[in-house]
Length: 286
Image 1 (tube, helix red, strand yellow):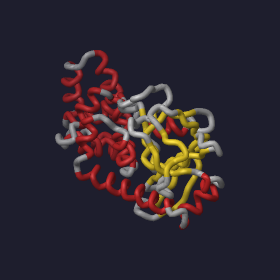
Image 2 (cartoon, one colour):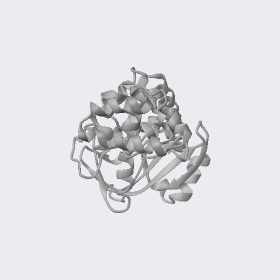
Image 3 (tube, rainbow, N blue to C red):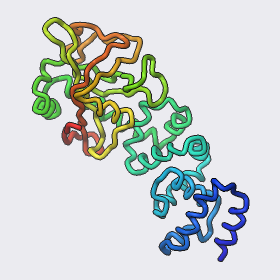
Image 4 (tube, rainbow, N blue to C red):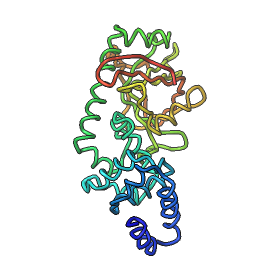
């Protein structure tokens, strides 16, 4: 067969490490479905690369639709995905999350300092989903600020003392294990809404984090997951140099300003989600 002749010459040029995925591909082709065999019938280098990246990234490597999608993106040289995956194969998990749920792009890009992903963000796909996600976050923030409407009523039902809390949006925190200034990717996260409770002496007691998602199924970023896992058992350090001094529901001064490095106990973490557009659907504790 033509495919095995091509694979044979490819195999000769690979080192032993590379042969692991290649030998596995030979087995999968031999035992795979007709669609999988057809995928490799007129294979190009991108077809083999797609299998290799999925294999090395411990992702499903025999799904033809996933392979085809990856081949298309690899062939678009503007994306420069080969450079991304060749330098760190774990990055393919981000690519798959975006393919599974495009709204994840808007979430991920907020916490990324990687110029390669930021470059991809400027292309149409990222611009559309990021803009849509940002619009939803702002819309939800503006609605809860008024302390009226179904969005705030749902928050009040889930968080009975929310009326006593002060609201600050887009707060950056260092993740557990990282110290100020925690600037690198994976060292910090951004909270959409932070509801802070003070005691009667003006000292911070704890915070409740609410993250707005376009849809219920939109995944948390790795940073958000790490922060969520601290709920009820840990604190997070405020990251920026600029202090927070205003409550966004009243525009009045906070009982005590929030300065860089201050630790705030995270009491709970909630997802406020929509229907994939601009409509509020619900709220759930994570």
